[in-house]
Length: 315
Image (cartoon, rainbow, N blue to C red; front, side, top):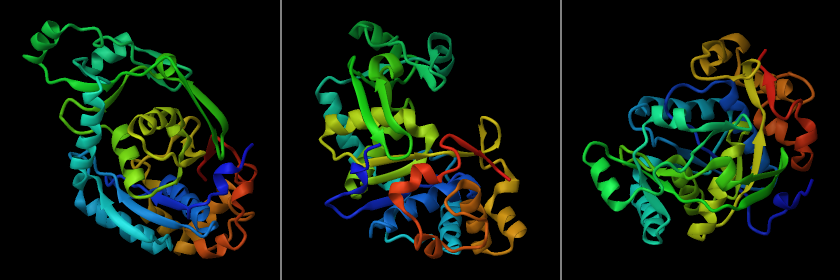
């Protein structure tokens, strides 16, 4: 595996990017800890970004709580917090750039339509079949009378490939493996794929560490980076911590929530140490602070360090 992503001329800038829809759980802590170690082991910085695109589910109380959680665990950040709810103008400018080049079109499909017409591909996610791409102007005008459309990006029949710092080589044919994807939702909110590439570029993020469930989204984000002339970060997609096979931890798994972890393990260092030992970031589950883990962390050895590259059962 190439380690070119580890050796940068520019200072490394990683990110914490929590969604304020609930309290942190063990999987969130693992992702944040790994992002922190990857950046800090290279003399880098961490940006905190609150990803509150989903205005209905995002709550200010959770945004405050997640910052306290990071501080409690010793996961410090150097810049931010930035909030996506403040970034609509930047997203709109990127969207208009794509629209002016004829790269987006209105999509009137409902969620039920998408499930009926799309076929799951490679176990990752449904592939959009292009249902609304060829509608005439008259058909679009008629449908717009009864439904506000979302906006999709036209993708080419082209393959995007990259070397993930954990998962290794990965490739996706945009037309066959993904299909035209959303850049704006029907409620006028900008889609995650667009927002995240605009934010990473604006905030100088060049090291993205996140769960392997987002690996299949990366080629789409890289395609947007190319279209918008934005720099491309290095990517490291780490295993998911699962409550049972093939079901990742979620905010509903209260036994793995940070409050439950602190009640079980008593101290923040014990929480960090248990997660580090469970995942392979440390040789044992002994209590440890992020700073103590940093002393022996080797970013180039990360793929071989982790106990599994896809999923690790919570214990």
